[in-house]
Length: 352
Ligand SMILES: Cc1cc2nc3c(=O)[nH]c(=O)nc-3n(C[C@H](O)[C@H](O)[C@H](O)COP(=O)(O)OP(=O)(O)OC[C@H]3O[C@@H](n4cnc5c(N)ncnc54)[C@H](O)[C@@H]3O)c2cc1C
Ligand code: FES
Image (cartoon, rainbow, N blue to C red; front, side, top):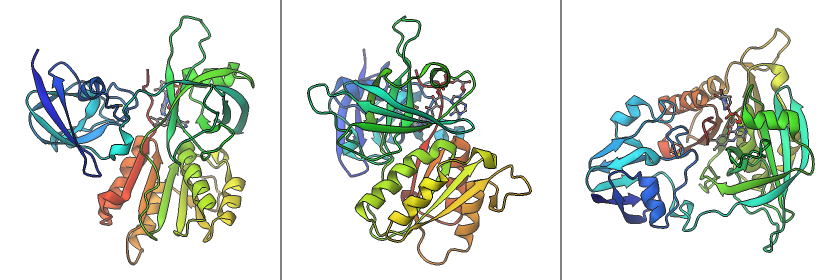
């Protein structure tokens, strides 16, 4: 077996080296060296493990176009879970060293404490972590997500997981809150629609992910959410309220139809709790005549506002389906917003 050395440079400048066999992905090789990279699907489907090959030869395994486009691959963007070295490889990663764990995350148990329908196809799910000898506190950073195992109806032991962003903030009572879109024929969706009940026990993994608030002085923070992409934004805004952060903020919140909007009262109350409040801009793509707000996607609204913005560009946080993220990235680049001010989390299906 031929091994090559992989040098991985993190965003905060730390260099990690480990051997990687030609038939091993960079993610697998890193795990063998007790370096657990921030991944989601591990199979080229979600785009969570984006990085750049600075030098060296490699092969890319099968992956979805949504996770890594042909154009990005041509620019030597890679997916760490689908990259196989063919010589010494130097990579740079868009996450800090703190995002790389040195031991695998131990699953924990949680109990369903609330399941509420809050929109046409949206459910608020609250879980309470069980105390397993080390306290039940829910420790995570605003914007992170958890993987929830689907309770196994058939008893066949298959443990499919789904990723969901936390909508609340770290707390001592072990509460995990999620906003979940119900998809037709979706496995977790079917559990939520048909079987979920207060008291159910679920296995949960996390916290995971690096989509978190960046401390960048007083630069404004603009949040762009599509549908349940609101969840991590709610978490970040709640954290800003808890810390009384002074950065001016605004939230573009997009849905297809006005009746799909949710959590507006809660967002209003949250705005009152922030020192400078925040501007809430609901956007409806297929609006009826009686809709008086923005008609279009949140990316359209953002583009229009960036076009008339004078002065320094804000930090942009965007979460939702890949098409929304691509549109926001394009709008930001057209306005000259530096890439390091753009932070995104893609909601993609395709987990195990
Ligand atoms: C890091 C991360 C965080 C996420 N956070 C959230 C969150 O907070 N709230 C939330 O609602 N979702 C979130 N998602 C998306 C969520 O994980 C998937 O939509 C979920 O896997 C759907 O599970 P399911 O079992 O119901 O459907 P599946 O069994 O996975 O899929 C069944 C069918 O539905 C389709 N489908 C499933 N999900 C989607 C989708 N997102 N878009 C289009 N078609 C889909 C599939 O293509 C398939 O045909 C997140 C995804 C990632 C990667
Ligand atoms: S973890 Fe690599 S694409 Fe999902």
